[in-house]
Length: 236
Image 1 (spheres, rainbow, N blue to C red):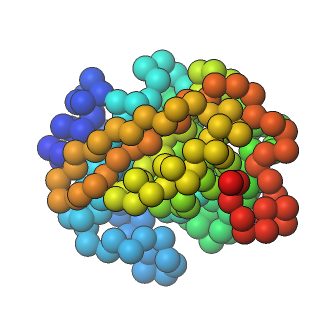
Image 2 (cartoon, helix red, strand yellow):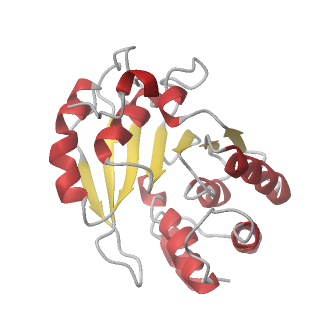
Image 3 (tube, rainbow, N blue to C red):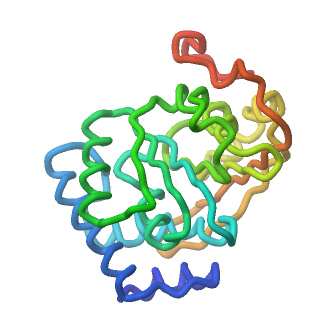
């Protein structure tokens, strides 16, 4: 049993069971093993991964809806934060969005090995997912970690979440002070509300925050733009 995981879950009023602890540990086993064959994470030390992967993911728990919900983890890479959240909140339906085929294949195999019936994997590109009818404005929450700057994340994630009740949770670091002003116009254009910055307390880490962006109105169907249309230029 990992005391840090218990503490982080407890902040959201969640008591992790022994089975959930085992699943979180097993996920790290799968991630670190697969990382020897493909680039899934730069964190290769097991103790560090327990904090910076699982622990980091669990800091989102207090910001998730208390009731069953749909969550999209955009650009999930090796499955963080989506897989740990799916384990901690089995009542959540989680879609892992990862366009890199090898990474998506790992996610499929990991989800199967862990027996997570509440998780599915999509290999859609982040900029395409929000235009898919089965995804657009159907999620209660969209999460993203170490994917892109906030202006891009707003364009990719806000179209995914539900009108008025949905929100984006972007996991950010020290550069958030620069990214927030740069993303202000994009957030407004996409009908996002005023961002709320939540400080994150996690041992051995600094400057961690979660930026919460509420969805205030319907997003214009032109967004998100395709990679061809965007031409590498964020909304500004």
